Amino acid sequence: MTDVLISGGGIAGPALAWWLRRYGFRPTVVERAPAPRGGGYKVDIRGAALEVVDRMGLREHIRRHDTDMRLARFVDAAGNQLATMDARIFGGREGDDAEIMRGDLARVLTEATTDDVEYVFDDSVARLTPTASGVEVVFERSEPRMFDLVIGADGLRSTVRRLAFGSAASQLRSLGHHIAIFPVPGHFGLDRTELMHVTPGRTVGVYRTAGAPDARALFLFRSPAGGHGDRDVAAQKALLAEAFAGQGWRVPELLEAMRHTPDFYLDSISQVRMPRWSTGPIALVGDAAYGPSPASGQGTSLGLVGAYVLATALAHAGGDPAVGFADYERRMRPFVEANQRLADRNLRGMVLGSAAQIRFQLLMLRLMPHLPGRERMIRRVAEPIGRAANAITLPDPAPAPRGA
Ligand SMILES: Cc1cc2nc3c(=O)[nH]c(=O)nc-3n(C[C@H](O)[C@H](O)[C@H](O)COP(=O)(O)OP(=O)(O)OC[C@H]3O[C@@H](n4cnc5c(N)ncnc54)[C@H](O)[C@@H]3O)c2cc1C
Image (cartoon, rainbow, N blue to C red):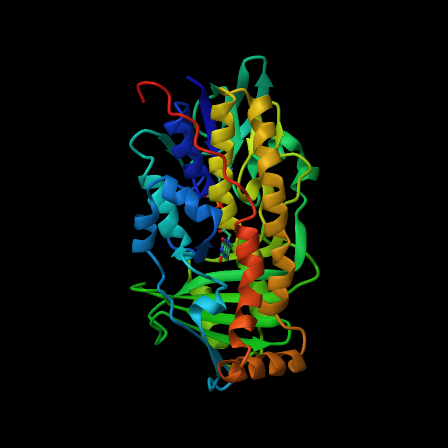
């Protein structure tokens, strides 16, 4: 049996473990966090990724956790409503596209695999040494072990990528903005609604999804200076407070909540672009290989599709990494590139450069319900996302091994 170490128990990691198990491989997942990470932010599952969760029999589980968001409301510095938008149009979702909290999705995927996949929490790979028969893996805590293959599914700042491809490969392509997100205690008066306050170069949002115990604050801001994702949390919080100092609306209240939250996320909005996603018996999947950035809205879908395509390619190749990884890359690369291209365009609509642009956007939103070409305009926004989300022909699943 082929032993595969998967570094990262987020989205792509457990999805890959699910498929590898089904194909008769023996995956082990090592996750740095002490337990599956809950909460987070809302993510979309679209296009080919919906087909993948269907094939896993998980669509209904995902539906059950749908955010069920209804409305986005734009407000001025005094909290007055300036415009509203249907949440599905605001999120660029069409048809069966689903929206779910990242933590809920991670839990669904982990629960679908815990019975027959070994999970090692609170640990990380520390050294990878390819040998003639596989990869010798040294961990931070556990005893060293041999694996036939190692897959890095450990996110934007992948350790496997750094260890196997070198630090130059870990250079991220910054899109010139930062994103921060954290929970806000209480409901903030919201029920399946998102409030947005937009000023030049800065956007603040607060939303609460169906049945959530608290609301989430989301901050986006321009920051040409590059990444701060690897700074310590106190420095990250100071950076956000400085970027939004003097802002109106309820920004001071949100920044006060930020000071006390233990669950704070801030990072540069960046992409991973690599000429190759594998080297010998080691490969990357999901954000670690081709993170398209939160601005693309497609990171989760790329992770789910990538996991399926990688496992299926390996199964068809009988576990041979040279053949399997090449097939995975050939099928995935055009799909990845189409989805990465969405990010710059989306970001231009999420963070606006000038007061004039903001006035124009709000005017368009107010006029939208009354314009004759309304449906066409809405489609123009959603169509490129839908096209990119479907820009792959999924391979048929490989046959399950006999006796499985
Ligand atoms: C604020 C925000 C909003 C987003 N919005 C959307 C959206 O609307 N739509 C969308 O599709 N995507 C969105 N994304 C992106 C999406 O979350 C990611 O693209 C997706 O989660 C990628 O899955 P992954 O499994 O590759 O990586 P992750 O989900 O990042 O999982 C990586 C896992 O690896 C673990 N790990 C890291 N280092 C190590 C290590 N050394 N050893 C062991 N484990 C390790 C981490 O703890 C984590 O559990 C958003 C992201 C952010 C940050």
